[in-house]
Structure formats: C-alpha cells, structure tokens
Length: 452
Image 1 (cartoon, rainbow, N blue to C red):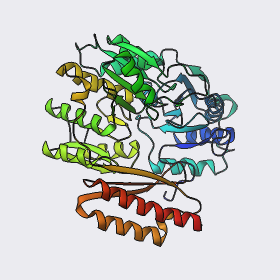
Image 2 (image 1 turned 45 degrees about the vertical axis):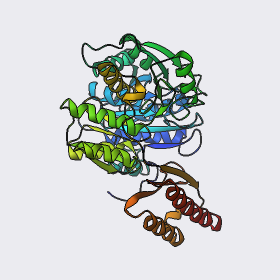
Image 3 (image 1 turned 60 degrees about the vertical axis):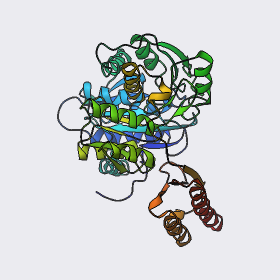
C-alpha cells in the first residue's frame, strides 16, 4: 500500500482537541481500525494505553477504549506516563499494540495519538496507511460479537515498572549522592516518575513543573521554555538542570552556570563516552539534517561518522536499525539509546549524562561543552495554500542560497508535519552569510504565501 497519509503526520495524529482530527469520533474509529489491524491470532489481544496530563486526555482515552473494546481488544490503562514507558510496557506485557495520548511539547489545547507495535517501535508509514484505509472502510461486519467484546483494566504498578527500568540504565554501583539537580517535568507525563528515579539514585531533586492541572502542560516550563530552569539552577546553586517536554521523550540540559545545553552536545557526550567504553555500535551515531556541523566534525576527528536522516525520532530509529547503531538523536533533545529504549527517552538520556559527570568528577559546564557550534539560524515561515516549496520562485531562492553557501555550509528547508509552516535553517562558519541566505529564502516564501 502506498500514497500520502491523511491523518498521520511525522509523529502520529495531532490537532486541537475537540476539532478534527482530534475528536471523539476519530479516536473511536482509530481504536476500532488499529485493533483490527493488529489482530494476529486467536489469543486475547491487548493494547497498553497511556497519556500525558492534558485535560482532553480523558476524552480521547475514553473514545479509544470504546473503539478497542468494540474490536475485541482488551485494554490495559496505565494513566499518565512518559511516551517511552508506553513503548517499554507494550513489549514487557507482550501486548499487541501500545498507544500514547499526547501532543508532546505542544500547548494543552492540542492533543495527539502515537501508536507502537508489539515490538515497542513506532509504526511504519505502511502500517499507518493500512489503519487509515480501515478507518475509511465499512467495519460493521468485522467488529467483535457480543461475547468477544474486550475488557478494560488498570495496571497499578506501571509507574514503578518504568522507574526501575530507567534506574537499571544507570551503571551498577554508581550513585548520584551529593548532586543537586533541578528537574522541570513541564507539568507533563513524567511529573511523578522522573523525580522518583533521580531521588532513589541519591540525588537532591528540586522540582519545578511537577504540578499538572490539565491546563498547564508545557506552559512557561519544560524543554521548550527553559527560562525557569536556568533561573532555578542559579537560584539553588544546582549542579545540573534537566528539562523534559510534555511526554518526556526529549530533554534539554542546563549547566551550573545557567547555560543551556542542546541535543547535539548531549549526543556528542554520550557518543564519545560510549565509544571510549567500547559500547558504541555501528561506528557512529544517527542524527537529523538539523544537527550542527560542529558535531559532525567532532565525531569525524574521533573516527566516528554522523549519519543524517529526516527530522523526527521515528526516522532516527529506522536508520539506527538499518545500520546497527545504538545511539541517535536530534538537536531538539530526542535521544534514542537502543540499549535501553525503542524510542526517545529524556530521563534515560539524562541518566547517561549524569553517569559521565559522576565518573569524571567535572562540572557540567566543562563536560558538556563538547564542541563549538557553527553559526546556525532557524526561522519558521507560516503559509497558506499549497506548499511554497513547490513554487518556482522558492526553488530559485533555494538554488541561490545553496550556491552562496557552497561547501562552506548547509541549507535545510522542510515543511512541518504538524502545521502549515516551513522551517528554514542555514549554517556556516560565516555568521553574516548564514543571516543573508536565511533572510533571502524566507522573503521568497513570504512573497509566495501573500500571492496565494
């Protein structure tokens, strides 16, 4: 089956709650179709269903449950937990499907649905297309007979299972005693499990963004709004700040001086640490087209390669599996460490960084400044109508920009998978050149959008 997906984007289905496609009707239909798609035998089938802390999560959860039950699938409810916890539980409970209700770093008004296969990995484009086709078909004759309707139950120790799994990724015998850590959970899915894991490993944990009320997820907190983290680190004289996003599949760090550390520096630290320990597989790491050229140069100096892929942790994971690599990530903070998880896991990545800090006995400001980034500029241009990337004027602007950069830099244009926005990114050693080409391409996109 081929063709463009209509519901699924780069990371599941996402939209404003109670507005298409994030409606009760779509969620219920998705539950029915996904349940039927993953019927694979005569056993009682099961789906693990988790969510973050958005108010609309209750609504979407109930709709999905009714859809799965109607398809004859039993549902195990685990409540608010990080996205990587759902992937973990799907595998450990031998479920046929995992579902996470979350819009990640988006504001509370939005919500989304992410699906995981029985192996704990996000679904392929092909599987998502098959589910969409089922949703568009007549399912009335395929739903469960009255005696085969599914049952719903709650797994009370789900949070504890994830905490123990995360802690097991930390080197045995090593502790966080004496470290003061500011932890910002974005008022999201990790508000209970992340502080618990760090505290049980010995850290003094200062919590912010750990009081969700259904409306404050990602609001002036978390990895996309790190000002509060920096202020708290300085105010409490902490050794490190950790900020997760709404579903805790990515992170941002802050050193003891209040300086922010992005995903490229985190990826560099973990890659070099694992390479030194003989744990790095595949001779390098996977990152996206957005990662800084400084990271690429650093790895090359160590004889390691940087494999680039499209933006989205699912594409990072796919390339890692193809190449047999066990470390991958994004500049935005998605870190995929396949020794421990099948998807991005902010808590586990933070624990790997903390392990290095403890081992080396160096402050975060020294250990996490792995390379000097190339000047990089990212702009977002909103548009109406068809994609401006197809317009001849924008294509010409792109060719001009690439000629200007030559071998001295890179240009990346990509359309968002969740909103009508084009991301324009350029980097080079010459900051003035970067600014010039970004401004030129953005102006071309604006002209096209106005004309539309």
